[in-house]
Amino acid sequence: MRLSGQTAFVTGANRGIGRAFVSGFLARGASRVYAGVRDPLSIDDELSHDPRVEVVRLEVTDRGEITRAADVASDTTVLVNNAGAVAFESLLTGSLETARRLFDTNVFGPWELTRAFAPALRASRGAVVNVLSAIAWFSPPQNGAYGATKSAAWSLSNGLRSELAPAGVLVQGLHFGAVDTDFSAGFDIPKIAPEDVVRASLDGLEAGTAEVLVDTESRAAKAALTGEPNGYVRAMAG
Image (cartoon, rainbow, N blue to C red; front, side, top):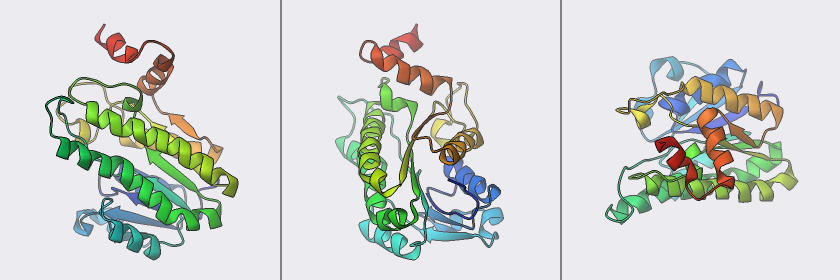
C-alpha cells in the first residue's frame, strides 16, 4: 500500500498515539485524514487548521455515532482503531461495570467500527490498523481487565483478517510496550515515543505487514507465549 493519496480515519485522534497517527498520515501524503474524537474542540490548532483534516465527533461505544461516522467518511481507505480506555483494578475485587466499559471501548468499539467501514474498505482494498499492546500476551497484577480486552482484541484482529483478506483488505495488529502518553503517566519506566509506534505501523502498512511488533517488550512478550502461562510477567519480575 502506498500511503500517499490514501484517506484515513483515526479514532482517539486528539492526543497520544492517535494524534501521532494523524500527523504521520499527513507527512506521508494522505489526501484526507478524518480525526475521530469525542470532543471536536480537543483537536489542537495545528491539526484543525490543516485543510486535509476533517474532525468527526465519535464516541466508539455509541452505535449511532459509529454509523454516522462511516457515512460521513465513506471514502475511507485506512481505518485506525486507536481509541481505548484503561483501568487499574483487581480482577477479583475491581468493578465489573468498569470492566464492561473497557470491553465496550477496547473490543466492541473496534469491532463495530470495522463492520461499519467494511464496505468502503472492501471497495478500496484498504486496511485496518488495530492498536493493541504487548499486554495482549500477559496479564500483570491490577491490570487484568485491560489485558483481557487487548487479548480479545488480538483474537478479534485475527478473525477480521481472515474475513477481510479475500477482498484484499489488510488487517494489521499493532503491539508495543510502554509509550509516553497519558496512559502511562505516573509510571517511572522506560517509554517509547508515540511517533515511533506510528512510524512502525505505517512502514508495516506500506510493506503489507499483518502484525507489527514495535519494540523489544512486544517481541519478548510474543516469544514468551511458547513458555509457561504468564511467564513474561515472572521474567520481568526476575
